[in-house]
Figure (tube, rainbow, N blue to C red):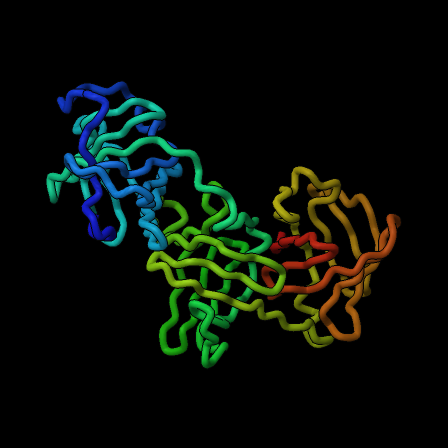
Length: 327
């Protein structure tokens, strides 16, 4: 593994034989979890070395102390091999395996044997968990490794509720896709939502309403500030029509009584279940244009506008974040 300063495949211990052996179909599902590097060939790693692999679905994370690299992997059953994609393609041959105890691999380029043992998840605290509703919106780079960015508007990220990720670095602009990692601690970037090919994995260090910080695959800590713009009176026409709630702080629409509603021209608010109109109320904007006010039979609510365009919105009230897209 060229990502690590040490090659990453280990020698066998516990007296097991390093003979190629058949494995049952579906064994790849047993690799899930965390595996700590203990030995390379016949050399044990120093005490306190923190090198491990995290298999998470078809994604993996390689960690070497403070450094980490994300990637994806696939299982070639006839050859008993892991096909690993990071910034390059590597092949690891499975030499021995004891579920939830021992994993021995041969890295085919270096022919090194790597011995790993199962380990519990790292202690909570380094990375934080988040929902998609915490991340949707536009973010401006504010610091790199605690050094303030010279021009906060020079780099921005826009995470869309539709799964698109827009990166604007001034002269360089890119558009790819994103999703949350299975443990909700990482932003996984993808070339295509319909394929598992991953480009990078960003581990979340802090997320709140106004700030987001993550560690990129090279170990740099990038801090962003949320950029929100008000809805001007001239923009109200852009809000008219049907909106569907896709998430409220991790809760899906199946948990909601009214999963969609419609803003109408005359300030009327209509809630829907499917195509059926079930409840009516009124809506409007605050004088500052940063709060959408709802009036219904249940009472009045004001949801702060954190992000919006004519296709999607992120609203917040009492620490709850609501993601809406056009229905």
